[in-house]
Every structure is written in structure tokens, then in C-alpha cells.
Image (cartoon, rainbow, N blue to C red):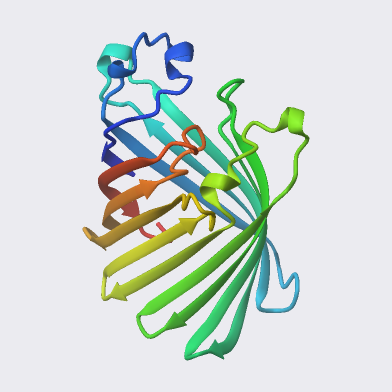
Length: 238
């Protein structure tokens, strides 16, 4: 949860129409972002002892909590259910150990009506490598084609591309992570996310997040945004 996220230009999108806001200036530059993720294994040993088939759901919300003049509306909420096959691995590439891999069917949408509806379906793979205190991941995806009349965002790949590259460095209880996306086109659209996690308590970590680029939320996937957030994350197993 990030109780304080500064966004110099929040995308009001359909908020003015749906919530009755008259002007974009009525949106606050500081808002709350929070994410809830749940993953439940449904079949261990699906493809051998080191594999597991799971269902997962992630909810990410952008909340104008400090906008008391307009009853603190939710600016955007993204829903992301998926079916994930994960398996452990043990082989090396240039000194990096491939410790785990995933293949998943993923749906992402914001549950809004036209013209602010956004959704897409993907099949992705995720390859995770580790070396000492470092880990890297490569997550390419394929977008499942949709009928042109039903496609809410036909150009989303022009902004979010076809892959994510992740990196993480852990030093004791401190973790620094980097995420990169790029569409690999001449217009060079993409995103960078940098996070720092640090201990606050037994099961709670402090969390600082910087984001710059496209696709922070589905509503404004085609708008370049820059945000800086401060908050906390509950440790795994809470």
C-alpha cells in the first residue's frame, strides 16, 4: 500500500463523466495506490514433483483519498485474474542459475463501460535466474487477438510492448528492484519502475516506488506518467 503517491498529471479519463467532476483540476496530485494479490495452488505435481498449477488474482486501485471536495472517488481499479503453471528448475546460463519458470493465461481489465473500458488477454512466460544476491527475470507475452469491434485498446502493445525485464538486488533485509518495458519500435515507448524495500517491523517493510512511462494503469496506458510513492508492503506469509 502506498498512502502517498505524487502524480503531477493524473489521468481523469472517465472520472469527470462518471463522478460528475467538472474539471480535471479537481483531481488531486496526491493519491493512494494499493494492491492486493492472492495466489492459490490447485494442483501440485501437475507436470512432475517440482511443478504446481495455481489460480491468482491481483487488484490494483488508484484512490483520490484526499480529494474530500469530490467525496474521495476511486480514479481507476484494475483486475487481473490468471492461471499459472510454475515449476522449479536447475540449470545455468553464463553463471546464472535458472531457478524457476512460469507459463500463464492472464486477463486484465478495469471493469468500466465505454468509452473508458480497457481490457486485454495474454499468454506469457516468465524465466527467473539468480546469482549470489542478484536475480533477473524475462517475461515475454503474446496478446490473444480480439474482434476489432470488441477491442477496447487495439494499440496497447504500441505502449506496453511484448515483454518485461526485471532485476533485483538483495542486501540483508533491503531489496532494490528494477522493471523495464519497451515496445522496440522507432517511437521508443516503454516504462521504468524502481523500488526499494526496507524493514519496518517483523512482517512489514517500508516501500518507495518510482515509475516513469506508459501503462501504470489500464485507463491511461497511452499516457506517459511519472509518479513517486511512499508506503509499506506486508511480508510474504503474513
